[in-house]
Image (cartoon, rainbow, N blue to C red):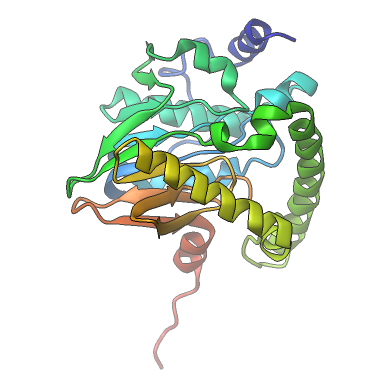
Length: 287
């Protein structure tokens, strides 16, 4: 299936008018926490591993002036193999487009799994600007390079077949992770990522992540910016590398995280499973 066919399949499946379509899960009427900027990436809509319900909860509880979608929002690799698109995935798209319609500046930077949309870089659709990369200026004056990050992954760039084999193994691990969390929910236990835990324990994975972060930070420094925001490796992080601020907003498959900028320029990672656990915890009543 070529890129045009992938786009056609998605367009045929989704509502013709996202902005006016009614979501299967109505938006919650709650007071939203406002931020200056929000970054999310690696949602992988079109896969069973996508935590769409948790992302919907996130979108219903936060708002911002600007929002960056930092790649792999839709998983074209998996959609080519088997088309999977439940109502919750529609609901995510509808919420994002509604956010753009009501005035949020929305910038979409496609990644390697949704690279078919890179051909539309420079165009705007439904209030969403599609860009190959972007520069963001924080409230305190720092310039941040925004990109997905796959261009710094040697496996993805030089050995695509290895990347696809790894993707298949990762999909199998995520299926196990999904069933594990089904049982955790039944036992009233919070979400826990098996794949995230495994990745943290495997020495080679840790070395790959560290090398990736160093390479991305060096590339950002060579471009004369103060920092970089990326996704791709599904590992949320805030750290300083050789004077460059490195930010990774994580993913909505394993960690369910977002990067946010407060109105004073302060940056923070939100681990949404933890936010939900605190919010839903029973309130102790004093005797």
